Image 1 (cartoon, one colour):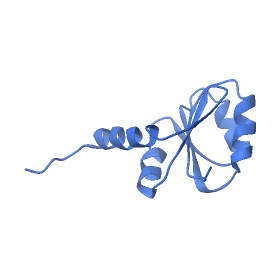
Image 2 (cartoon, one colour; image 1 turned 135 degrees about the vertical axis):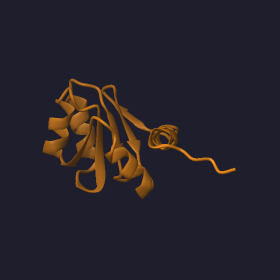
Image 3 (cartoon, helix red, strand yellow; image 1 turned 180 degrees about the vertical axis):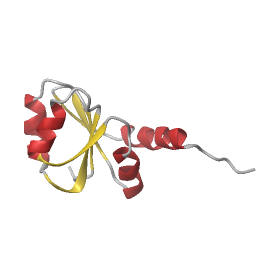
Image 4 (cartoon, helix red, strand yellow; image 1 turned 30 degrees about the vertical axis):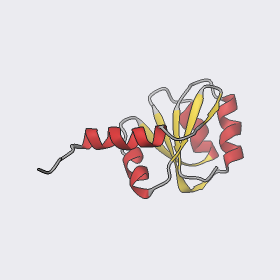
Length: 102
């Protein structure tokens, strides 16, 4: 018998896998690191997610209440130090998923 998972079940499994790993926390926001391409695809498609490509977009997403999660792709023009700087000044708390190496 073959087990079939629907999209929500797969998303839950993938997010659980990502969130079980070590993360960094800045001012209440958590930065989870995405290791695999399939993880990035799931995270990008989360409802309420915004993908950012630079620090200005990250800061805007951090200050937008409708944005629940933020994805930073591996080709974004953002450094880990830049992420830390923006998150330390942010007033809202978000879940950030980053494909950029720590």
